[in-house]
Image (cartoon, helix red, strand yellow):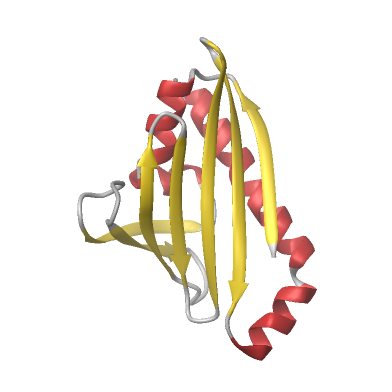
Length: 144
């Protein structure tokens, strides 16, 4: 399953990339995230891993930074027991003070039960993705 969210953000692309690529910012814009816990590598750089700890529930992801080509691209994978998510964030400069963020997430559900749940959860997953990206937009525009 794929979800794509595209937003225009009133922040220059260099600053936007800086804010988006730093995992320490995630709890500041993801309202369902309690904290991140570094596991290995230089946080936010290729090969580094960290745990995304939710505020509620046991659904913890391990994030791995796959590539970092700032200010234009950042790729991550998220892995949990029932699902893996490949994320590609593309940033485009529209002007000195305005950028476009395109967030593409591809979900791969593990096991039959997860696949069935994924089919019924498509709308909720897409809504959550949009909610997170709009949260990032608000965060970025308030932290220029």
